[in-house]
Length: 632
Image 1 (cartoon, rainbow, N blue to C red):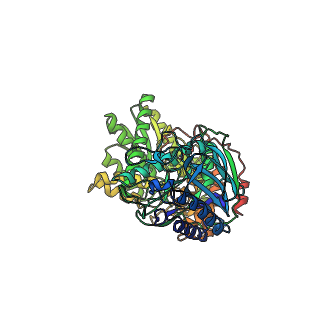
Image 2: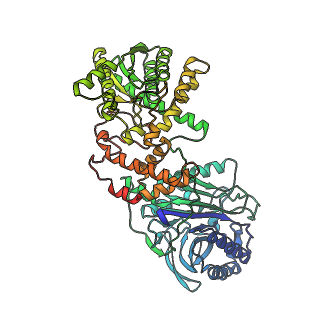
Image 3: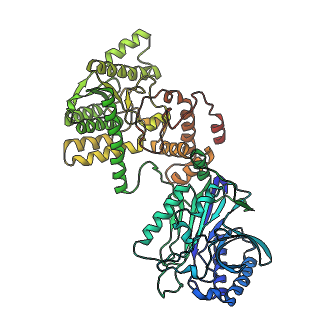
């Protein structure tokens, strides 16, 4: 289970009602199939050994005795399988019958967990047969093994401490206080649920929402296996609806009314990390821990990672995300306007994506406040690397939005500065570039002073992460509206706004900006074309945003992050290229923290942000060596 990954499976077979021997054969067949597919945990449906719908046949001694006989057969046939198998069967304890889930591994019964909530309403009549196991705490002998029967137990893999299994059964997850809540507070990272939930119109959607919300609320993995084909249809129908969730995210779902197994690779290390970070996630310690030992096996990952984690792939969801982010930016800026008691704002326009988005946010804020957009002062400051394309796009954008436009050519000022500090203008080094960036910031600040306004910053989250800004140059403003918007999302935000101006000049301008190479334009152009392309220098932003998301959100170790990046981008970039840019990401992320330590205010829009006042409190002089050493 390298890097915390575990393969889980959920499934069911065509149940033979009260034919325990035949059901046992099916359980063995699916167990062997799951093991052949390198599955660590297999979850089958509720009462799968007997069938859920045998009703009063549960009282038959023939059924109960045969269940134990066939359980022994299952144990014998699976003793060489390195898969934890969860099945359902009835157990008689003292004078009562209990609906139980048994946890098996290599021929051992690790324990039995009884169902807590026994539904006895509407179409359900379980109270006729079964007693709640809420207070049950018994040791019994089953198949010549002493086992503990209680709801208060967790099954822990001693070789892989992230894997701690808690159990609840069907109705348990529908209750106000679920057994899974107690299990997770006692350390369970994976909840398994053998279920028999009948199908009704709309119930599948509700079931998805329920399991998703449960796994998100408890920050756990959740494997839900439902019975189906073969069960009695006297009054209800079951649909074999299996679900696998990880912290609210659907990893795999079955086709309903089909038998067989579904598989998913789950990241339990990520779940554990999420819990550590959430200080309100309490811990308890009153459950018994039952140990078992899985072999060490590295999985060939069968899992989808979104190559653009900040950008929904679905078109409608992406549009909704863009609208939401745009509104957060806008309302954050509106509050700052009113709190600062200012009427005018200043922004530097390069004709690139970031400054375009900032201006669009400012424009909407002024419209919503009912203020004249002419109080927005947009300034272009052409210099050595400015191209006609970016300059014209900036000017057109300002014209179409009807904001106040200013052009301040800074060439003379920068050349004078070169003379003042005795810098050779033919030497195109960092001084050459940063002189321009700082001159632009000085111009903007002074214009803001003249107008009695503030400067709105344009830098985005990706640039903040990489430190891709000039300290006290474009790094500085009074409020940064893009500060937590990653570059990959900036592009879609601008595209989203362009759709609001269909057929207008503004749409065409925004689309041309979208297709302009990302560049600070600090080095001279060649034949009127941009020569300094950011992604040629620091690497593709899609990679850096991917690195940032998983590094900042889930705190992956470098080798794990490299592994999932190769898994995700292997068809587009070779391993050496991914490793090269990941190494650069770590180096810049650590060494550029000093810029983030004094970054201006700006609104948080998503789950990843780098504000030193909130999401990332990191020393500016931290040593990156351990992270880089792991990649060597």
